[in-house]
Every structure is written in structure tokens, then in C-alpha cells.
Amino acid sequence: MVSIDLNSDLGEGFGPWRMGDDTSMLELVTSANIACGFHAGDPAGMYTVLREAARRGVAVGAHVGYRDLVGFGRRNMQPSSEELTGDVIYQIGALQGLAKAAGTTVRYVKPHGALYNTIAHDTYQAAAVINAIRAIDPTLILMTLAGAPIGDQAREAGLNVVCEAFADRAYNADGSLVNRRLEGAVIHDPEAVARRMLRLVEEGVVVSIDGTDVKVDAQSICIHGDNPSAVATARVLREQLAENGVRLQSFAARLWGVTHD
Image (cartoon, rainbow, N blue to C red; front, top):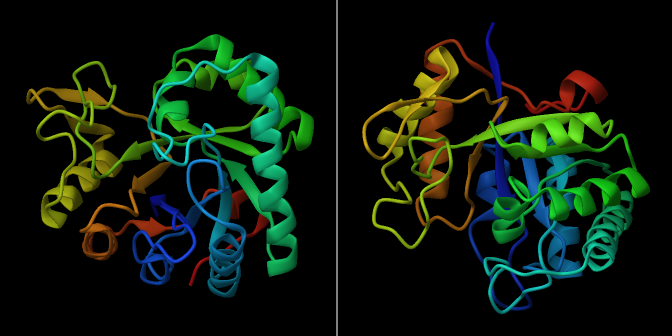
């Protein structure tokens, strides 16, 4: 049976302000990328999401970003290599401590926003992130954009890599994501998302914004938790995948026996 992981960015509230419906998403996803306090998230909120993920058997990863609460981690930055390595280690370590208290374990790292997009092609910043992961726990898996050069860079450094596709984001013909500032960059129709991702799983392609087919080799599908239609999209996607014989399973299950009911 064909299987695929479904991940979402969670724990991105701050203080009394909440983003997305983490509880509902945890019923639908198999992996949760949890904000680590730099682009979003606070300790109490992170701890709550970790406990809920542990209760449901959802694998958890560190969603690390630039130190940019005001910009939600979506502004380009140029930290030094030492600063970026230290920031990533700090964020992973914070989540690891909270995860231990919550009865679960951090299994992977997924960079967020501008950091994610930058390191996909910037070997300098990519090296800083890779070095951080190797320094704190080289068994952690790096989740990155399918087809991006950082995948090979991380593998050459000895890391395990999982590549993902974005269910609710439009693609350019070269396999990159359409800039969020452009019309059509975010897809809100759950049925359209489900059709796109079913084709990804079955044929390994997504349709770009200009109508051409793009080859995408992905082991995980991301649905952004801050999309207003996130829960509906995840629910329809799960249903469509199940109806077509696709099993939802975290990539962590293959290595550590993490399961999702």
C-alpha cells in the first residue's frame, strides 16, 4: 500500500493570541511542526501542543525560524553563521526540553518561512542550519522542499532528509513556490487541494501556476495551519487519499515506530 506523511505547522500562537485550530489539526495530521518561540510560539503553548501530539501519537518536529516575532519569520535576514547555528540549536533544545516533559521526543527539524526558502538554495545559511542539527542531535531528520539543493547538501553532511510538497501553495514551473505576495499563491479550495495531492502521490507531479506539470519527489505533504481553510482541507485530503488506497503514516514511523491512529 502506498503511504504518505501529512504535516502541519502548529503551536504558532503567542500569549493570548492564537493562530489556527491546533487541536483539530492534530486529529488529522501524522506529523506536527511545532514553533520554537523565534517566529511564533511561547513555552506554555508549545507544551500544550506537544502534550496533545503525544496523546494522539503524532510525530513532532522543531519548526525553527529567524528571530522575527514581528514579521512571523517571513522577512529575509542575514545573520552570521555563528548566530544562525546558535539560534537553531537554541530552538531545538527548547523544544526538546518541553517534549521530554510532555512525554514525547523531537524527531525532525523543519525550518520556517524565510529561513526555509533561503536555505533551500543558499549554501552558506544552509550549512549553518545543518551544523546546528549535527551539533545537537545528528539523528534528527531535516525536512525540506522537494528538489531543493539543500537536500543533497544535508545528505552529504550525514543527515537523513525528508522532502515535502505543499498542498495549499502554488508552484512555479521550476518547482519553487509562488511568492505569497502574488495572486493565487495560496490555494483555499479543499477539493482542489485534494485533487492536486492525490495526483502527487499517484504520479509524482503537481500542476504549476502556468499549467505545466512539475515533477515532485516528496515523502510528506504540508498543510499550513494558518490557512483559514486548513482543517477543512486536511479533512478532505485525508478522505480522498483513504478512498484511493493511500495510507497516512508519519515518516518517523519507519525509523522509530511512531504511529498515528
